[in-house]
Image (cartoon, rainbow, N blue to C red; front, side):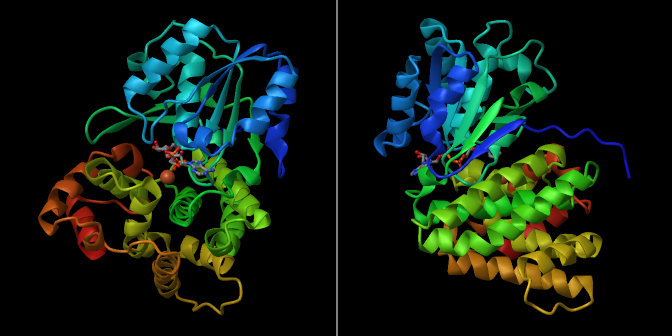
Length: 385
Ligand SMILES: NC(=O)c1ccc[n+]([C@@H]2O[C@H](COP(=O)([O-])OP(=O)(O)OC[C@H]3O[C@@H](n4cnc5c(N)ncnc54)[C@H](O)[C@@H]3O)[C@@H](O)[C@H]2O)c1
Ligand SMILES: [Fe+2]
């Protein structure tokens, strides 16, 4: 076994309705003035109503920054930091999807005024500490609550990441009742994204490790068994909880064994056509699985036995990998997601440009079990077309 460092958030509170204990938790951590980072949808759906009551019952003074937008640009981070500095808080609560939680992470660092956002892009660039931080996800997908990454949109089509153990939250609350209003298409896409996190962690080239493997297996077991119910019967709290837990476990897995070519090829789709992240992943996933099969077939076979526990699998890993690719294609169709780039109104003439952009994601491609050349990337997009 290779030596490895495994990092995770120490405290996770899980249970239906537990977000109503947010104030008790914040107070026990010594927070008196808390800034909640969220987006307008969360406010509109009333998801913060009960948690805010509990925060007030604990005499916390609150400010709510609710201007986060999906795939947050740098301006949102700056704006949130300015609002937080004016308010003067001693704790930060990220409450929402990956976008809100990613802004909350950066805010908890940047409010100190010691470094600018530009200073901390990349790996391990945060010099000081951060304010106490609680994360409460309302989507079951990114796993951002459990990762040490924050992803920010830096240009028209580009994103950059801040990666640092400082971004790991102090505490997480997983309350499935917050996710029951997630629309079916969002539940499907974010759920498949989380499944991809588990798969790519399990095949990660350099940092694959036994703890990430264990988390990835359990994440896939939970999500494969529940994604269909969560999408088709959104109010089923047990299925929602399994998805939320699965997404967090997958987040812990890929935080320590990073994702690879599926994400590298998905990012240009999000950047150029504003296709939601999970759907972008789903569109290229079956084709990347087929491409990787000669190198990762054994791993895919192991995962397929977890995803399809009642199926008698062929002995040839290549055949099992094909089965896995077909499973994900059929799953996307069954869940009502588009399955081809053509359906997304992407022009075939754009594919070379997408392949070039995917090659810029070397940070991710180096984790792939098989080397990906420019021609390979183009061929995968062509198959996904
Ligand atoms: N930090 C990480 O480790 C990491 C990993 C993967 C992705 N990301 C980032 O996360 C972001 C995507 O996050 P996301 O997919 O969770 O979506 P999101 O946070 O962008 O939210 C998308 C939409 O869903 C709505 N929404 C959220 N929860 C809801 C609920 N319970 N009911 C109804 N509507 C709800 C929001 O109001 C918003 O309009 C991207 O910026 C991506 O780059 C971060
Ligand atoms: Fe992802």
